[in-house]
Image 1: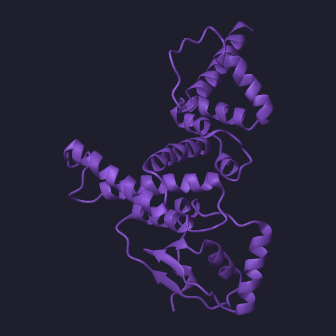
Image 2: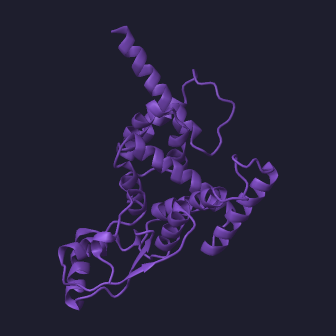
Image 3: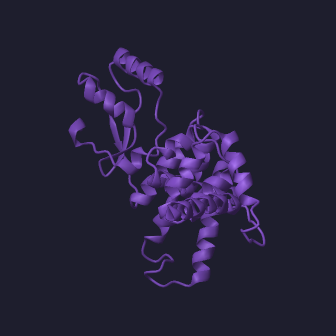
Amino acid sequence: MLKLSSLKIDPEFSAQILPLSFEELQQLEQNIIAEGRLLNPIITWNGYILDGHTRYRILKKHGFIKFEVEEIQLANKYEALAWICKNQLGRRNLSPERKKFLLGKEYESTKLAVGGQSGNCNKVNRCDQNDHIDSEKRTCERIAVEHGVGSATVRRAEKYMNGVEAADEAAPGAREEILNGKIKAADRKICAIANAPKEQRSEIVAELRKPKSKRDKQLASSTKSPSVKVESFDDDGSRFLIGILKKSTRAQKGTDRK
């Protein structure tokens, strides 16, 4: 039997897994101890756990529990990430925010997995750009069919995922706050974070962490200022982003005067 010590955890893989509540974790641990074994195998790729991170931690606490490991064959790390996301999307207790994030992450990872293989269209092998676009379109359509959504939903989910990851990079912990609903914001506002300059993203997250009623009043006043000349706003959160950046500029000018 494979030794528990040979299993590995990749932080990027484990970050895609829905964390259990304290009560859920306690119940799972009690059930496993009562059974004396894992009912389902831990799924791995190249020794890295893809499914079973929580059960792995329980096994480390209770060495007498019997377990099995199933190693699956995947082309690369991106394909492994796509597998994890697809597997997680099969769960029933996901929030709408987490579903969007995982759908976007699966799409991004699948594109990267294909692009990294020999003979496919990417910047390295200089394939025709139209073929590359067609490949992405087919990937998007396939994922949409698998999850019973439209292609546009998949593309929007990728933008949402990028916004969430940009938020977490700027303010660690923001990702889980968004995905569990603690931070409540329209999708376009989350998407806008990825479009903002890196040095100002933490301020945007700080604004989103405020109570929604207070945040909305501040944004309404900032976006109506005549000093902001914008012909039109698309649906990627531009109005929200301009409001935040204007506030930052005014605050900086106030500091310079002191």
